[in-house]
Image (tube, rainbow, N blue to C red; front, side, top):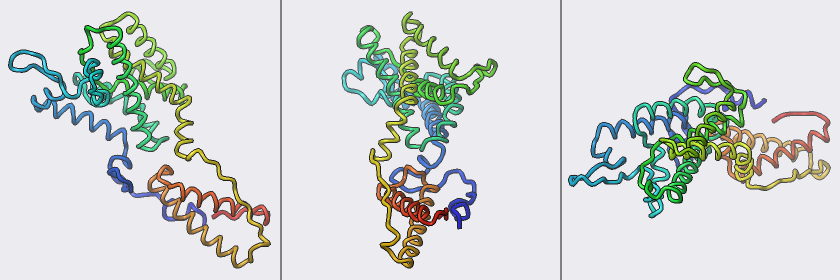
Length: 313
């Protein structure tokens, strides 16, 4: 029986989210991470809009004496420098208005779908977050070194994350077509150059939103670097940076009955491992399971080379 005939290879019934193991909630890692991020961003925006107290907590406001108060979540370079490093992350989930939120989530939807099909949800979330972190760090450094008067100017938004995804997609799918403002078709690589150039020009000219453009540019630069170099590093890390040489078994050293028993055992082991890959993704395999799969493959290759035929498990 080929692997296509086994239960894990049959079409699964469609549901909202699939079940999965691991320490994280299954709805977070086994569903669409892009959908989850959009829901979280929209929910935070709506809850803040419905509750003035939460809005003041997240974005800051004014006390009863008219003095400004700093919100918990906004990015403010001066406060980050004082140790409030959580702002580098929380600012990624706050937005300055409905239009700001809509555009970021719209682009996240279109760019993120292609990448989440290639990566695990955990990997997508990690890279998405680091892109935003790179942008917010660059913003903080610029304001601490070059604009002391603006160290407490707030910054919010997921644009650093979004521009990071734009840089990644521009490298991986350079000839894909996007429609700017739904009207003008451009190759995505060309669009990335244009938006990156606009950000750089705004930073150098200290335009009205040059701090925000700094976040955009740094996020995109990290995204481009990741697509060119980082993905290979991630793959080596997941593989444990180890190479296993196949061990050839000498057919003469084992009896026919032993070889049949070994093949049956290998079939059961491979079947269980492939079912786990189908259910939870290849990233869910342990090092022990990877070694078992490699050993079973090596034994099968040795037997095939002796028999001069291919009999797939």
